[in-house]
Image (cartoon, rainbow, N blue to C red; front, side, top):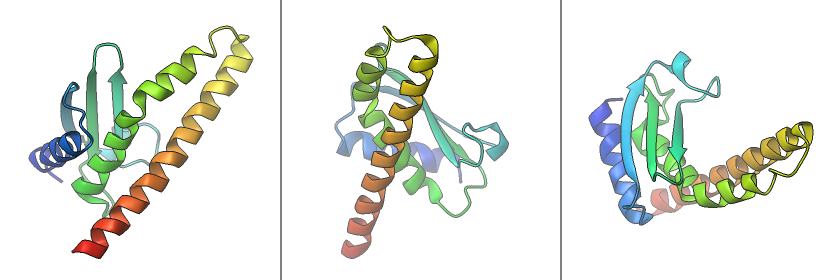
Length: 127
């Protein structure tokens, strides 16, 4: 995967999901540099600043720039909701807060994966 290909796909999904208020950067890195481990892409964002960095693995495991960009842009689409839910944990004890934040992240990932599969299936039917 190239940085240009990933950037083009990110711009495509940014427009389709109407996320133009976000200032996005992209990069292609070695897979070992990505978190969580064994992922082929990730997004790090600042909700208040409306900035995000989307990275894809140079060796993407066959997922390709389109799928990685879609997946990470779905995370960005949910960013405000995830941020709001995370703020609600501020009054919890540190241990409970950690558990709640892990649960929020896990559920957000489940939603993103479900939407990604549905969108990719729909795109496959139209091609």
